[in-house]
Length: 107
Image 1 (cartoon, helix red, strand yellow):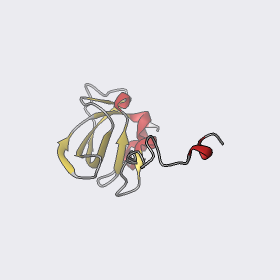
Image 2 (spheres, helix red, strand yellow; image 1 turned 30 degrees about the vertical axis):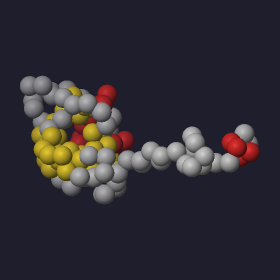
Image 3 (cartoon, rainbow, N blue to C red; image 1 turned 90 degrees about the vertical axis):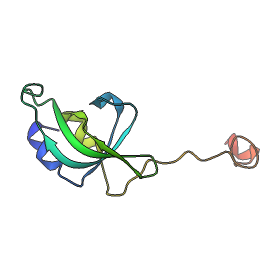
């Protein structure tokens, strides 16, 4: 994403930002953008942008305010549809590791 495209990240946009693409946090960051700020001292090159967000848990519950500094070039890939949640891991089926019959696992 070109720095001028940061303007496309507006309040209400849902993001899923990989840990390698933001500062000051751990794991996949599920976010709803509240505002976009640019700290000219730290972000003069526009490679990074500060976002004021609400952080969400994997089930969509609000964890609280979160203000990560996000790599600008990662923003386009991080945008998700409103209400998006990460896929949940399915528990093993009744047959052990998964619910697929043994004869179908080798196909």
